[in-house]
Image 1 (cartoon, rainbow over the protein chains, first blue to last red):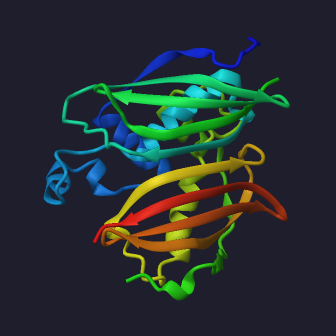
Image 2 (image 1 turned 60 degrees about the vertical axis):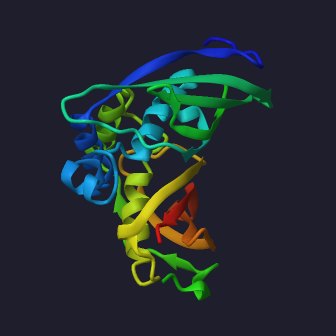
Length: 133
Length: 127
């Protein structure tokens, strides 16, 4: 168990998002909205292409947070879906998640999370509270 | 159009959702989580998405036009396989901004009398 300090920047991790992962997430979450799988449909509603589920991005950021202190330690987790992640066919899209320890009080660390795709922040106000062992 | 009289109303689910190990495994596999003894932090959305849509199906909310604005989880204990969860959903607020309806739905998952997770979803209904 490592110790954390306020202001500490945690090492980034890069996740790979592609169409196959969107199908897997749709099946795991039950969110079968066609904008996340069907290019023709996505374009028909004005999107540039298929986009990733915001909740998939949040689930991946959740994995990053879980890796800090274990899934069981995550008490609060919130995010705003500011920019969609466009996922073209046959393409791996990189999502890089990093975080900073904003505060530590009574054994609870507040963590500010950054999620970046193609140099654009895709989550806003992403925060988690985790119980430190 | 969303019915403003519904603000503050809570809809209690009748379904008991039993969490299977395979559903946890499937969700964990998507994010590369190897620990499947407990569900990943956002797993509860796989229950509340379906349940809240059922509970709010007569609210006038047009789910086909809904864009997810933000999401918050308050996790009181991790979900584990075998949990028997009941969902209740409350429309906490609704307002119109730039022609779009913005609706905040809170969904709580209870196991018996214990609150396991509370979630808040802000939904933007495109005009």
